[in-house]
Length: 495
Image 1: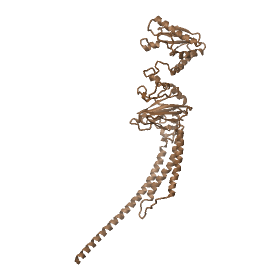
Image 2: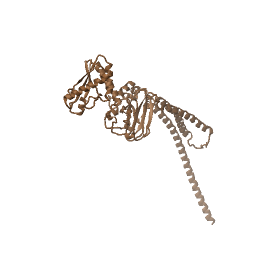
Image 3: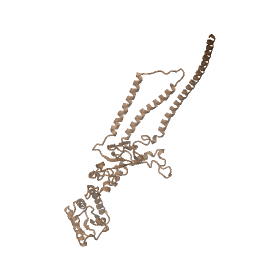
Image 4: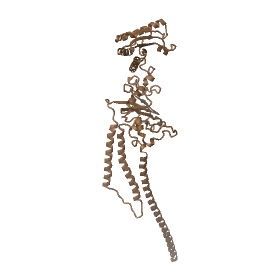
């Protein structure tokens, strides 16, 4: 029994010796791993410091390299009066957030280096510091209050609406997938009312109410043209999904919301040509506009302002780009004079025209200007006589009775004749070839006399009348349009 116990003790001692040997081996391995881990920690900490330097250098160097291409910097100063205020606000915000950005990144990577895991060093448990909490609460509070107050002040200035007494232009932009419908007021300076229920893509894409006289002179250009130095109010609408009316160079950006009209007011301060000249001195804009064409103009010469949609409104989002031209006031007035009313070009005297057969104020004014120009040209011409057709003198069918709408042109004609000296005026009447020739001569003479009588009642003297029937056609009598042109009243001015 004693021998068995002795054998067991010997075996147990042998097991203990083996386990001690294995523990020593494991301890040595652990000590080696700790050394490897410490070396790895040191190496990673150094790499983090190098990354910090490279990252901050990248931020500052890339910002400096591309500053001439970014809005608000280099040549891309704002092209509107309010834009400089917004740029200034962004610069102030960038200054304060930039300080925080740099300090926090330096602290983040420096602390990762300084407080990396090391042998014989223990982390300190630091749960609370009233002083630090006051500092990092109070300082950001004052900075944020300053930024918010400054932002609200500028926001209120930028987002104001026009005063009814202000001198401004109001235009309209309606977004849809994937384009913009633009609308300008005509000579009355007022945009007409709309009703979405009246939208017809073929004849009335904006749903204009043609019974509203303000719509009659509105026109729809393919690009935005505005005068420098004039306040502009833009009505912003959408037909389908959310779009965004974005004029980056003017610091204008406003959502176009279906069913909820929005607006933006701004004043252009630089013409397109002036902005292009501003880009001219920068190497980035002296490159060819088309690198594949050695003969192409430089980028600054091809510069154009643009209207873009800043919402991802669908696959054709990119195609919503429209050109924007800012010109001098005189050039803008000339451009306005060249535009034609959408109603007069597409609706007038069609089945959709509620004023079909009536003479409109806009037509009377236009004819007044046209008649005045024709009369002046006739007076100033070298020829001894000139013929002017009276386009807005109308008679009842088969009769010499003047229609009421004739009074506008005849009143203007009376005024022009009475203001002129040294001229004689003959009124001539003409018909088409329908009916008896002798009857046509009598009818044309009677109509000429009717005009003479009307003008005489307005104080015009020395008038003569002549009827030519169908003997002097100006168009073919084989078509209704031609016969209509042949039925006319003219004046012959002799100096």
